[in-house]
Image (tube, rainbow, N blue to C red):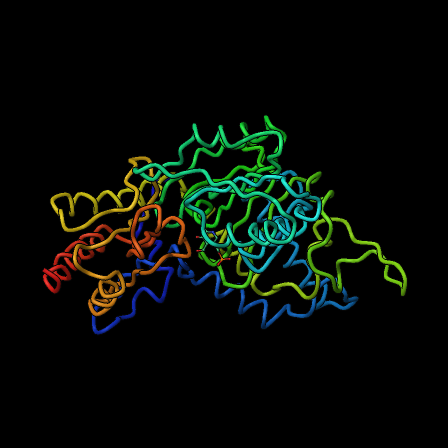
Length: 405
Ligand SMILES: Cc1ncc(COP(=O)(O)O)c(C=O)c1O
């Protein structure tokens, strides 16, 4: 199999629109990817044909909706190569999945217990752990980031110790594009008896993830970065890890029995899915994963990397632009600052040229501080971007520069 970008691109209707009278060039997929027709069709079909609340019904529509919802769980299990559907918990996104683990796992922690994070984390993988620092007196330790955007793995190993309870680190950075050495991180953490959570919000889109081979304890991602709808995300947890966690939220569907003086809880995954779940979104997520599975993912990854290389080559002489993190093994994200220009102004001028990029801290303030900047511009590439778009982006940056030169 190979990858035909034009065929894949034709599945994304929004990419044919114009912005400010220019063809849209969408380089903000790291924030939210666009959706193929099949995802929207799956959600419409479920709405028009098989919609009711799940799990509770004895009627046909409730059973059909439940089947769709549970099919999504099996689809995610296959996508991550998890051992059982009971290891797949639906959340509203990566953020909620991390909050779930921090909150439930945190209830077993004591003052002085240590959590290891890194300087490149998204706030979603920092703030929930700060809650534990504030509430339970746990100690947060941060793995430093090297100048080229990689983690300082010697420092990482030195941070691990007998009080380390959890290592929570991005599989791929949403700013630097760095793909962290997951196997090495996990093996070292397990050697001191710590659990590992990988934040796969970015990585799960760009590479195949095998939670069994990784031997990771928790893995999280969001559907909307994976060409699926907003409102649904995934927490994978090893069966024994999930079994040991108390519930996160209370409500319908997560209980065993409730009486006035006593409650018992359902087994995972239902223990962690209080209330009505994202039913239509689950149907959309199934379609998004099936879309990805219909492609040669190795060829897709090579295409995405080629987009990044094309931009890098196009800008090779540009001493007016500084990239954040330029390790050669990084993924298809290009974050930078332009000399003499504020990131927001650069993004606005690019928007006038039809190009969508993100500017700001990218919810990674500690990382911005590490690189001595207050913000940056980020272009993130997806499978539907073309080499021509990469060239247009380079040309647009050169034009933008003339505003500030
Ligand atoms: C690395 C990383 N982690 C977590 C998140 C949070 O994802 P969500 O907002 O979908 O919960 C993001 C989103 O940008 C991210 O890039």
